[in-house]
Structure formats: C-alpha cells, structure tokens
Image (cartoon, rainbow, N blue to C red; front, side, top):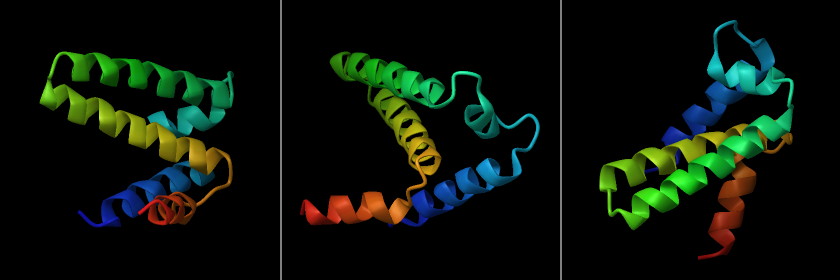
Length: 95
C-alpha cells in the first residue's frame, strides 16, 4: 500500500477542520467542548480495544481498531498543525 490512502484521508480531515460541515464526525472532533482531550480519549479507547482484539487473536477486529487509531491520530496531527509528511518522515527515519 502506498501512502495515497493516508494522504487522501488526511486531506479529508484537513478539509473538515477548515469547513466544519454540519453532521460530520470529524468536524465534531474539532469543535468538541473537551477540545483535543476528546481525540486523546478516543485514542486511548481505541488503543485498549486494539489490545483486547490482539489478545483474542481477532484479525478482523485488529484491522478495524488499528484503522480507528490511525484515523484519530491523523485528526490529532491536524489539530496540532502538523502535516502527514511529519509522520512519514519520522517513520522513514526509523528504517
């Protein structure tokens, strides 16, 4: 898989942050009364769910929860004014 999917997802997240369309879950994370704590809590929740899925050897659930973590991580990066390239560069440096 190339990073195209991540780039497309990050672009959608950035667009939701800028336009804040009504009814958008992503937009609601940017306007939540808890601020970034809402996203941090979701990351914690999804991480716990991933650990439990891994413990149960549930491959489908592992993939699902991993995707949730990546999505919420990208939202956090956007909140912090970071770019996807910041994450990709860090991963690249760890090769």
